[in-house]
Picture (cartoon, rainbow, N blue to C red):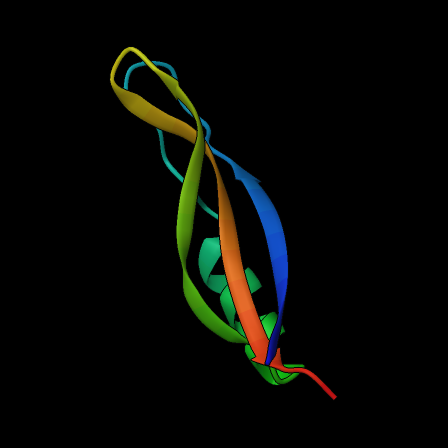
Length: 61
């Protein structure tokens, strides 16, 4: 059994969306024992993902 953690990341930019904090978040959660398993787009505008949830998992105690 696993437990999951969802972390919202919001992109920046006008014509092209850029995500800046995703690598730091993945490293931080990995240091706490979480494993990055993927992302879920939560907001799309003009065909671009502008907001997403990073998904992490670890074995439940």
